[in-house]
Image 1 (tube, rainbow, N blue to C red):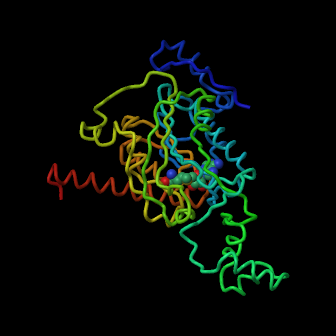
Image 2 (image 1 turned 135 degrees about the vertical axis):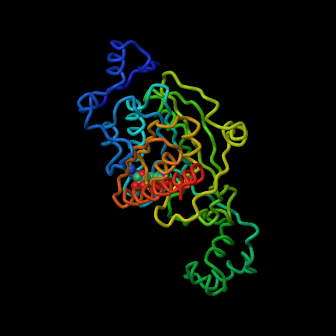
Image 3 (image 1 turned 90 degrees about the horizontal axis):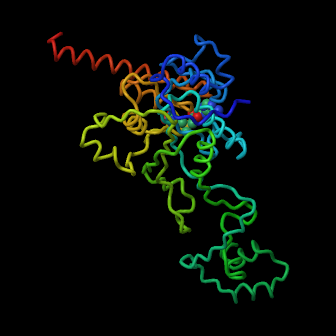
Length: 362
Ligand SMILES: C[S@@+](CC[C@H](N)C(=O)[O-])C[C@H]1O[C@@H](n2cnc3c(N)ncnc32)[C@H](O)[C@@H]1O
């Protein structure tokens, strides 16, 4: 068990030395107290493992910003083994483990979406009368006459006899169409923001901001788009939580034009990653880049404990920040490291070109 962290607003580095030690102890969990400093996870490294095991190995009060997108409980390869309870447990534990490692005054930014097809055993079947689909000329009277003539026929045989679908037989007899199959569990929308906020508040954070990321509309993934009043999947949330402490405000982090275009805006329009061929749920580099530029300074450490293909690390490198990445699947750790290597190479080439321009080096 990890102690509940206290909710004391404090910027430890600014206190007298003796008080610094006392406050560090206050903001440090039992597990972290047992860690030796040289065993802490090192910046500019991607670690393979479960975030719940590795987060306690990060130096207390060292992370300026943690930005991540967790499993969304939508049945992806890396989460299909999780029950809903286990998924909630994963997220609430990871959020709780962040409190001691974030700097006082630092931020936790979570990119997440509502669950649009959440199975609910208690939900009655949605009975939809699809008026614009009554294309078959078969009438209720035709069906009743056929039943009278062939009393033993089931709806499949009746459909064959009348040259229509068995759904048409159902519709003509019962006047409705049961959505999603008669025996399938029904699905509803599950809103996740309230749960995430509760877990963060319980951990000691305060909700600081929320933004909407508008991505490309996923028409092909929305099975209901053709016969329903539901909207397609085209936006996600960014919830930002604050750890009490002194937070530096520096409006020079963005240009006046950037503040106007996105820094002060609640809705961000950023196209999704088109080629999700190496990781099934990458977010675009622009997303963590914006959050990093808003909430950190060059040299700060940015954490992503669900780092996947390494997007947050790439963004951190581009913005001159350090990073720590954690990822459970070895194949994604390799992918992240390859992307990071390419990013660093590009950085070196950029510097060389700048030197050539500035000093005329060949
Ligand atoms: C939504 S994806 C993040 C994708 C990432 N933002 C990117 O751009 O590539 C979630 C990632 O968390 C990883 N993951 C799932 N459970 C984990 C756990 N317990 N600890 C660490 N990583 C985990 C998955 O393998 C997956 O790569």
